[in-house]
Amino acid sequence: MVLASLLGLSACSAFPADSWLISPIEYDNAMDGQPTARTDVTYAMHHLSDDTAGGLWTESSGSWLHLDENGDTLSRFNDDLLFTVHGISAVTPTVLAVSRTRRGEIGGADSGLFLFDTGSRSWEKVEVAASSIGDVVVADDGRIVFVEFLEPAAEHRRPSDPSRGYAIRSIDAAGRLATLLAPETVLAASVVEIDVDPNGTVFLSTERETLRVEPDGAVTTLLTYPVQMPVLSVSPAGDVISRRPADAGAAEPVWRTDGGSEEARGIIHARADCAGSTTGELAVTTAGVSTALPFSCGSNGVAWITDASFVLSIGDESGTVLGRITSPSGVVTP
Image 1: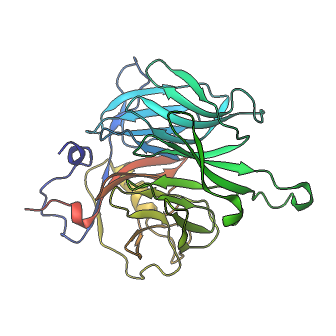
Image 2: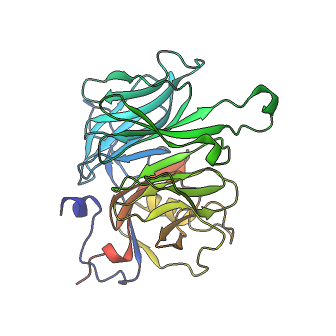
Image 3: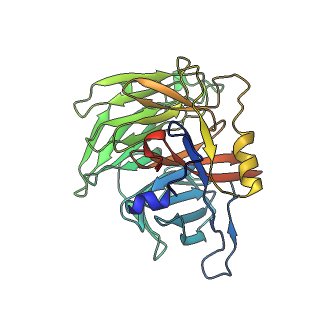
């Protein structure tokens, strides 16, 4: 019930039972302690994570936002802007696992894997023997799973190719490090997004493909697509949102907006036309079948909240909407 309220579900017969429902989130965008400034059109957001309690965390260029299960603002602040964040994932509603790099620094004390206490605004470094850490996700058993990028040997470096070998590692509360995916198992990549389902299965997306890594190390290629920035989120039920594969269904699913300002609805509808191209859209894959999400062109941030709903960052620097997306199975009708 709490999660349903975050996603604005209502018994509204205006929406067919087989349609996707998009509800722009209106929230207080004022900094903590400042007068209220509600809006549903905001800045671009690439890092999204559920907060483990039905809410949502986002980060963008040092701006942090925490929404509760109703979509109301719990915290909105700017932290040190000297860092580039590579991934966030909630340990608790107020503590996040964060990978970051201090600008201009390589492998220094201020770069790496951290636990960020958003209440006290304090950072605790997680000591791991890794010089370059990418995306991060907290598994249900408390392990922190992360991407470690490996510099290629000098004789294999090509200035025109930013791809590097990478491994997927995990570290538990006792500090024990494990390798979940060895670098020789997969192709090099420049960006890797990861997520973990409740069974401990790791999913990862690169610019070219989305893979599934079983707890025993077996690797399966789920999707391939034209080269583009990866996006990934896995629902509690195991449904995967990633870039749209070339073989996604040609039929476009029915979708509707519910509420939101005229500006917010305009942003959403402007992002619903990829001019017939498979590049730029996302798709949700269930049991091996991919369904294109035509309202997702160019979106770069997504986080599942329930089995049937997720939050999608729709737009760019000129205007972004946090859309609460509910699949047909989650839309409540009379």
